[in-house]
Image 1 (cartoon, rainbow, N blue to C red):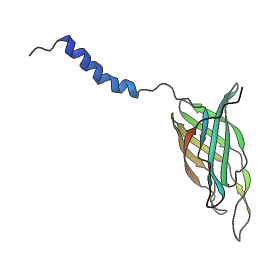
Image 2: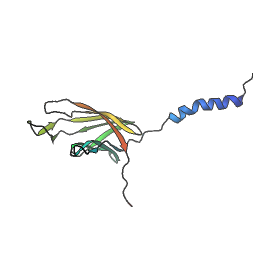
Image 3: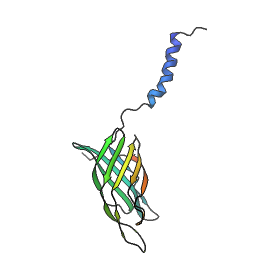
Image 4: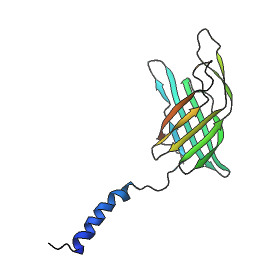
Length: 153
């Protein structure tokens, strides 16, 4: 049986199409990544939010953690290379629920390293203690991309 160009070209296209469909252009690194939510049973607001913006001088990040109530917002410069994100947060003092212990915890320098996809920001936050006696803690970050509300005209 002879196979002609008519049969080869469609078969070749079908073999290539899945690879083309999976190929994405550059990932949009700016946006809002958040898992902050209300826990009705406890009456708490918990989670983390990272908002990445592009400015004339580079990238800026707004960072917030909620543990019962929303914490303060840090706004810092960020380094973005391709789909990789890095930023450092300043040392801080936070109030934590700690029965029988000190109510305030001094946070060391904190860093975030992550990768951005079309739907998520995944990475690691280091330097954030879970208890007053834990010095070098780190936690995984897995934040879904959220729609950013648009301003009304």
